[in-house]
Length: 255
Image 1 (tube, rainbow, N blue to C red):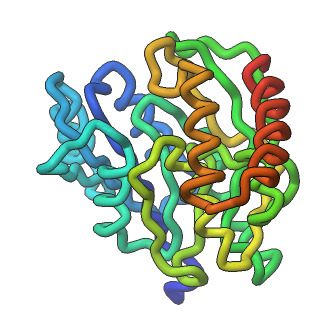
Image 2: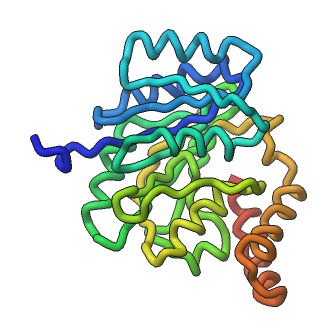
């Protein structure tokens, strides 16, 4: 069949010392009901057996590739960007090495892209799970659609659910800032396109006690930095957006 009928999706997965979880993450991509993908696992200086785990999967499935970031910096923007540079897909999606996709994730999202030519990003609801993988129906629900202006009130695109159309907007890259996923989706939508949700749960987000984003005060400082230094928004508007962000962030944290 023609190439456009089976577009290739590049899945970019940054990895650092994830031998305990990365196998489950990879298996969740292998288990997708949409089979036309490549998985680019980008190691950022792991000192455990993470790379050996990935190599074992890559031997069995040629769609899986292990890439090594030769200059690790300890922040996920660098391995993600390396993966984006190597990606060959018509679409690019992201999955961290400790998170999990549900089986229909990619298939459901492709359908949404085809509904509207203005849609350049598709995202979904996701479920929080415990560090040990236990599920308890803690669903983070996203709005049906969003755009750049609406996203200034706070990030509604869970990065583990986000996927964007390279054919429409070209390749975008992450910047060297904290909250880099939020800044990334803002930059994509700033071009005037919109983002739409599948309105389904397509992924499981593992809540880890030692994650970079566990310190809420630090995260709030990162948000303020994006308003003032990345988006160059005036101080009064920044205060307005920040107050809305804080309220929605509290609601999300309580889930």
